[in-house]
Image (cartoon, each protein chain N blue to C red):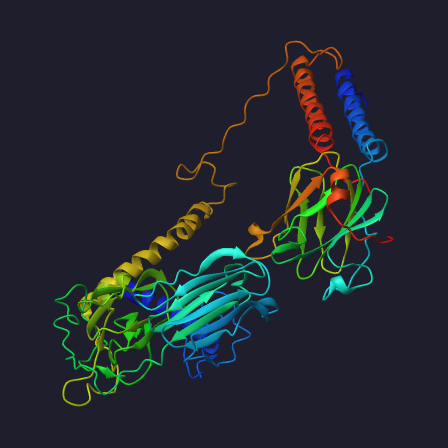
Length: 420
Length: 175
């Protein structure tokens, strides 16, 4: 068992080292554009789906207070006529935004919109001269893109209303998670939850890392418990592989659906938490290891919330670590089994085959069949391979038939043909 | 070397078949008049093909009596003309297509026919076609060109020649 333990740990260590270098690259890419006043959670970078948006320079065009705003579809950008103009615009609730096609083969597909919004975009591909209008009532950030040119970075966003951010009148919510972070709830105990809730209230954008080093592997949410103001957009950023976010409980009226699809490093998704209360969630593949988290929306009762010191040392839970190691060792063994069996099969027999022919343990030599003398011998031209001849004739006829069909019927018969 | 007479038979048949294949190609070229798309279309500036000397504004032009030229620019993900408005050409006339690309490599194929070429940025594919029949042909791009490659298509409407001349005001140019 000890051997298995070291095996699995060292193997995981190698994987983690490999993942670490990739994280650095991903983090570098994701950092672009976060200095903007309005944060779109990486939507305008190539960290989100599609390419980076060349015509988004970090500014959101402020068109608030206007009844009618126009966004041009297919402006010159991103290496062709592949841009929304402007890429990011802020409007007041109730503003009618008209999308005007100024070049061809574009559409508007809604990627994300606030809860309760009903913008359906316009997924039909249309050409210059076409337009599409929608009146944006629900406050929040709407993200959209042009499907044919998504890879070129033809993406846009509309912010309706002012920035989020809870005011001083935010309702107070107690950071009461019940037994969620203990082993009594579903799954294992959460090693990286030390009883404190990280206070991030008053911020518009909060990031929770998915798959930080905790719970005997990369099985933690960082931070596991966080307090935010209502209206805060929480971005979940995957920093290691095969995690998802499944909602365990949320306040009545909230409609956070998590992200149950299992995703890998570099992936991220955002949700804007409006309804005050306690939200608990977990990662389904690693629930047993204690990969659980919670978000408290609302101000802490009586002054500031929990400490700001985030996740401290991880408390390894012996039981779960043991079983994880056994499982990992088993998987490793299963992966090595073909190599090992192949090695044993190809190992030369104990004695050299030349000398050890009499050895019963090694394989017997296959005896050669006796040569037999022909009863009669016929000359070269006396034998008529009629069967072979007829087979050759059949193949020949098939060939001639295919040739006639493909050239004279399929090719010359299907005009028009290029004549010059 | 002794060769069995049956072997001689099928060796001879194989040589006859090869000769027949070559004869077919010769017949197709000289008898049926099938031409290949060559490099006679010349080259254009790939950044702005329609402004090049070797190209015209995309559209249909009359180059002579019963001779027409169609200039098509392929772009992600449309043929211009073709996708937004159909290319209208007369039947029983010599129509020469000049096709080039403004961005990446595209394809230009009239579905179900032998009119088929690759469209390379900077190169003009020049091909002459005679449409015998008044009918609608569909153009597809058959070189993968991007995310909406599958949606890149166009239409050619072949109309009877007298009707074409009555309805369409096609600019006349000397080729």
